[in-house]
Amino acid sequence: MSTHFTRGSLIRGITAATAVASLATGLAACGGDSDAATTTDTAAKSGEVVIGQVSNGAAKQTVIKVSEVKSISAELPAALKKNGRLKIGIGALPAGFPPLAYVGSDQKTLTGAEPDLGRLVAAVLGLEPEVKNSTWENLFVGIDSGKVDVAFSNVTDTEERKKKYEFASYRQDNLAFVVPKKSTWNFDGDYENLAGKTVSVSSGTNQERILLEWKARLAKEGKKLTVKYFQDGNSVYLALSSGKVDAYLGPNPGIAYHNRQVANTPDATRTAGTYSGAGASLQGLIAATAKKDSGLAKPLADAINHLIENGQYAEWLKAYDLSNEAVAESEVNPPGLPLDNS
Image (tube, rainbow, N blue to C red; front, side, top):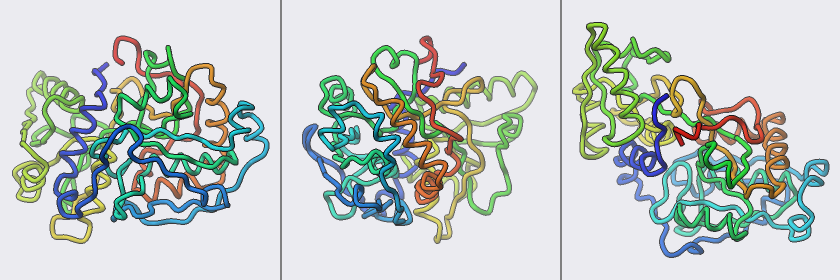
């Protein structure tokens, strides 16, 4: 199995995939310490959640009706029910990573797919969401200390992390190929379709490792895959639009974001296929993350499954163009990346 990418390599991949769009739209960056962006959203408890609010084009703003489900909120630990708030941790400092989590166009609201799902789940649980932004390292410190109850922050389910945390899965952890919109090529989940192609990838990432493994396999079959590297996202997409490369392989959320940003331009792109970030033998999963034995994983999973069953989950993904990362159900502590690949 391929070595899974670290969050650092994910951010590098998203940065490469979205640099052009980020420069064009001028998305604001987060700043400060681990309490730099703490917001309380009472609307989420009142029966509706605004998805993609002040997202600066990263999502189609959508109002989703959602109310407390008493049978699910009854599963919550007594102390959390009494407190009445769900403290949601996001590890997006210092710069954020659109479309998943970043400061919105009002320069203060923490927006993106991850905090929005946290708000939806809080509404099902009958709790007022309190979103706390921090660095990635302080995100886990916050869970450990009780400063936050749960992280919705693109955390991959791994067996190593299960030593300290419990999970409720909610999204596939995928890589994606992006091509010019006019291109007819598709990956179709088969590395053989890369024969004869030139593909760009970010150096030092998990997607590079996977792509180089495919290149080696094709070479043994007498087929050629050319891999090219560029210093930044501008160069990647200039090469793509000029035909110097056929495709770019990077994290799916960043590519979905880029596709939306350039949709109405001559350089429009599209996703030409996805692949599990965990490799061929396991579908990687992103999961809500709580302290082990906190008693939160089951009510979180039940809340997510309620959203799945009632269509709000699909609306949330669609708003961010992430429907290709949908899971059929949320699972408590599903199989994660093994200890030798975490």
